[in-house]
Image 1 (tube, one colour):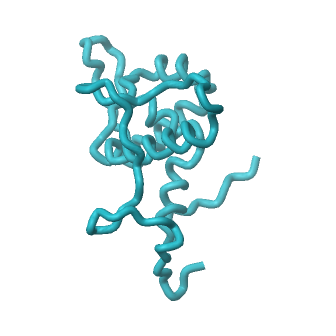
Image 2: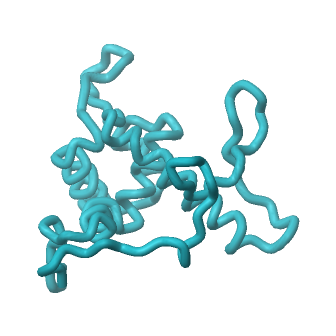
Image 3: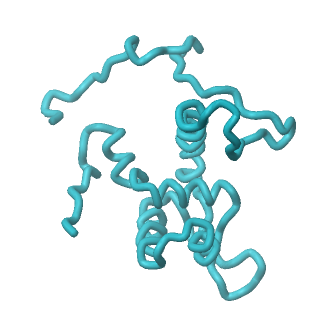
Amino acid sequence: MAKRKSMQDDACPVARSLDLVGDRWSLLLVRDAFDGIRRFSDFQRNLGVARNILSDRLAALVEAGVLAVQPASDGTAYQEYVLTAKGESLFPVVVALRQWGEQQLFAPGEPHSQLLTADTRQPLAPMLPSNAAGQVVQSHHTFVNKLPDNK
């Protein structure tokens, strides 16, 4: 299989982000880490991903500073993967994908998992892009200010 071209030096923030978390396994690992999964075997059991792919994705997320490795919290010889502040900052991305999926990929009334607030047990309000004044902004009200040599 040909190795994909790295986009880590691309001038586009979307391209750089996708270079790190754009494959399904990486983002599902982040999702599972938000859900409290910490051990290699638990990630593997929950996702059903091959061990070599899991090892590769976890290593990349650790190297990028999204996850950190620490000794197991129960005092065993195992190690755990925990979200760093950089990883925690992916929460809005996961929520936005979840909400888009709820709106676009499920039939009305079709059951699916829900993300609820811990205190009220209610679903989160829809995430909507807003400007500095707090007004909702649609895509046609934005533009990308590209660098002169951006390809």
